[in-house]
Length: 254
Length: 304
Image (cartoon, rainbow over all chains, first blue to last red; front, top):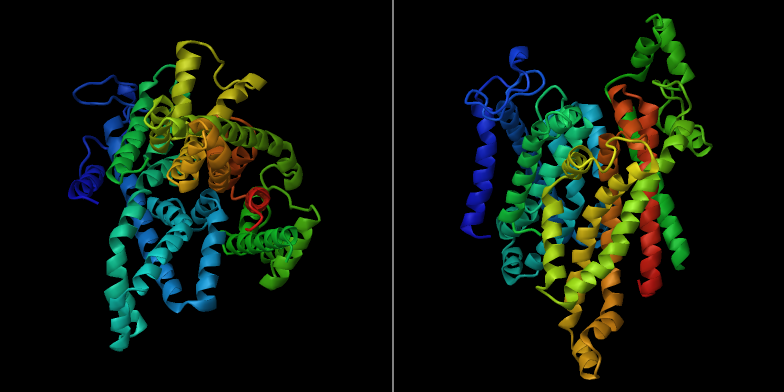
């Protein structure tokens, strides 16, 4: 994980976060006088069937996608480290139980988790992120467990144990800091996947409130204009593909 | 324990576990089905009606008893009635499932059939044309969601060149959905298969096979294919899960009347009987796919 990769990932997120701070227009302002506006100075990417500014909607969608990516990463890192290290440290049947559950949970499709989460907690990006993150906890746990197993066998962990360090501080001070870089890279390599998965969920109307602009939701909303105004579909699709490709590139996936 | 028994036991346990989760989660939802039914059917919202409906659906019983009753009914083929359509959920699913299975299975089968020659050609000549092509394809499908690719293809083939009828409902209109579902898995599986074949080429036994006068392709096929197919099948398991999500998006995009299209319509109406049935159908699909893959892996390598 070199420095420019971190910079690239942070840069993508910062660009996406811009939509939370400033938009060229109100993304929900309807202006029926300028429907399907071409690219102009006032509307750099044109307007949609209700005269809403496309750039403003894309920027808000970017921020919502960034929330999803961050939530997925947080849930993955915290959950994976927690279960993985616990399994590695307790050993015995506790370890077997955690690993078996993690393996079984991989079978449950993301769609089902997202569906139930949306039905229980409502349609918010953080909830979609939580659902996508939970769907990833199984593999993260297995990954973190493999790492923690290797670290627990290191002499310095034996030394810490011999000095009387108990399990909690041992995990926080000696095990987790040593596995974080690898876990971070592993979770980061799924950031692009989170972007496309959230787009699919929003397209299905499962990820988020359909009245708020989401890249996937925009693809769904504008799909009937494919004959007359295909550019409406080009921008959100390009935003998804470019973001996912950049994340994948930053974390060298493919 | 003999292998078939072990697989069967695990399948049943997984199914029971998922049914329990599906039941509890859906029972724990904040929106009350009784309130929805009263609104949907325009019933008088008196305490009497509420109590009658709760008794009729067994909502006043303890949770464990409700689960057992639901499971018994579910196994007996009584999947409840859809709020929205007023028809039995089982017959709604029976009508829509064949189409979903057709496009999902065809896409996966296409990927399996295409991944082996592509991955083999890529491993035969690293940095050659096939290797570069599958690499580009893998990078591409990991960034471009199938819905957007589908929209692009609809525009290029249907609007620009007028080769296909977009959003049509004949047998030919299924080709594009199947290709879209298969493309992602083709790229992923071809790369997995190639990676394992390349790994074999670094092994001493592969050098021995070459030294015995085998050509690279013969040695790779005879001594590498078995290894790589093992990894291919393991990756196939993940792709079978992935296919559910992409089938759902593709069904909605092309307006195909499959189970996922039905699900999306049902979520808006909070049609819980349909949600529960969908979770169970999908779980059954995944667990069956899993059992088939495990069976195939066991057949390839009886030590597992």
